[in-house]
Length: 480
Ligand SMILES: [Zn+2]
Image 1 (cartoon, rainbow, N blue to C red):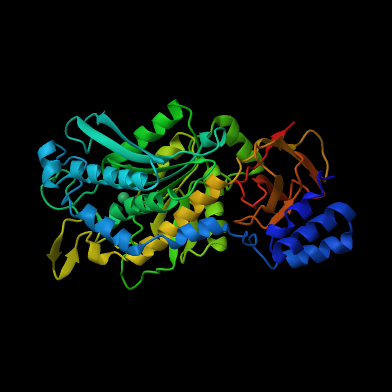
Image 2: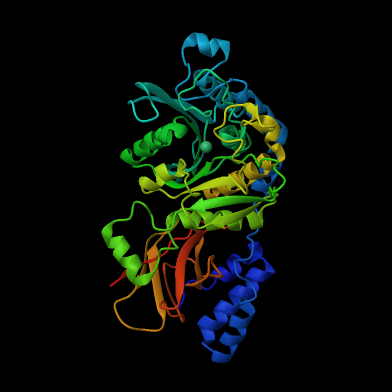
């Protein structure tokens, strides 16, 4: 039996009618085990294929309204104004002073973060992390690369160890990787992603969260993801607890006629690239290939989009990235972190990695005039909502297991308590369903038995707080 049944009253006020009816169905199943009622509920449940929206946090909703497409336009224009941001371009003092090259861009990003920090009484810790990249296929000589980031430290000493992170790459390139002379505006790829990170820092630094948010801009993406690789390795070496990475790369919503400006794609890996042999063996036996931590982040983004007014709908793509392409999220995946990539619905390849020119009447080049700044603002809202919802939520439960020591048709889950959690919710879905279909609150206990066969569904457990913030769900491991 589920413990803590008083929680259904406790959380009732922050729950929609839809939630309540779904939960009522769940409780009927749990408490009465009535075949007839179960079937009725199952039929009602089939009308939905994802969870109902959660009640939005008014503080977060207000912050999203602060996201400004005018500010985003100004920031993308400023970044393009440095001429080229090739990782191989100038970064000496004279070039920085002249406002040309990647060094000048880097100093500009740092100044934005510092300005926002002044506006919030020093709430952001602004950092530059420089390292030397050794020569490689697309790096002709030892080159200094700098990641720039701002840390909005969590207000709760224990919860501040938890980190959510948003990133974009501030380097750009033109047709020839080694051409550091001609302009490489990179308005969409990826000034748009940097503008998302910077605008999230501006609007979220006005709020306080128990967990930590990092706003990052990396270099060296176009040469081989070097900046993000360095950052992710550093985070792993220092055992940072990064719960989610949101990588924004090409989120400019180029204005080609086939574009859908109401949709942003969210790419997430299936088999975690950091899986060990034991985990792969379990996935071969029991499934789980559609339940990587990155995919839970993607689903969390979809649910956040249904709760907050962002103006853009995430289209979840269940693959690491597009054909022939890669991105900074995979650097984090390689280190075992959950990370996803946001990219506009339809890309215009005449604008990417192309020197600015007109050829046969066709205009090439990644110029600001092809970027839809309102679209970038919508994507920034979805990012900010996701970061804020996660940073406000309790930590996900740990050591989540499903008992599998004997053959039975009920399912028993147990987990370790999450600090600051007011209760827990069990999620489940059909094995063939892309997203969670059912949620049932189970109170503040850490063990529950449900009259559902674990052979037929996929379960997860998530933590809730008293305001209704929800953690990322955790899929149980079998315990024999
Ligand atoms: Zn890019």
